Length: 262
Image (tube, rainbow, N blue to C red):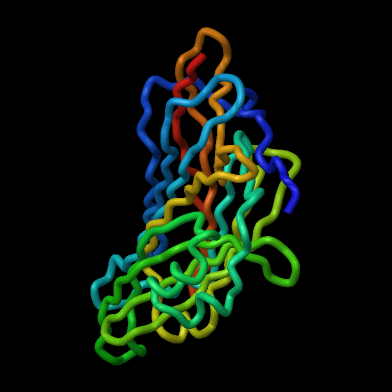
């Protein structure tokens, strides 16, 4: 894949000045559905000119405000990332889908570690309506891949409770030329995952540094081009949209701050 700068350094036009550096968390309640979403940028101290390696973390938790009812079933998710940075997978190989599904976490890593770009965890509520349910927890790992000739991210999840099960969430990648967000990751949860359980909680961090052609590279990088004389800036890090079965879509805009050096 040729190098593509997906997130142009246009942050200055989108920034508002801030005195704090806490990532925003957003909680919304619609009916008995409660959705909490958070995003984080690390590190926060970044060059005023150019870019440096970063990690972007996104997490969500879905619950019901009524203990007698189960939370709405998640069917799709969209994550839009601020355009003030660079997503560049140059030099990373693609992981074949068949090498990670079906597979345990250890087997998936053994087969596709060179393609690894993220990791995290998940929780799911498992059980048919009207039957006793239980919470299953496990690991999520993210690989660079392709589908139908287009770049994607494979989010492989695995649990061994109460029995071994693995699934792959395919995140398509699209690019926008205008607006605050330059890269969008979109995924429809596979039918076999939704039949198995409701994915109620995910914590995912995208980060990878590696060597290619004698140079150090980063899968994600960004700068903090705050105006000269301004040390900190607040910006819209990500916008998320969640789609549910039997419930309206829920969107959240999550803000972060960066500290400019140089």
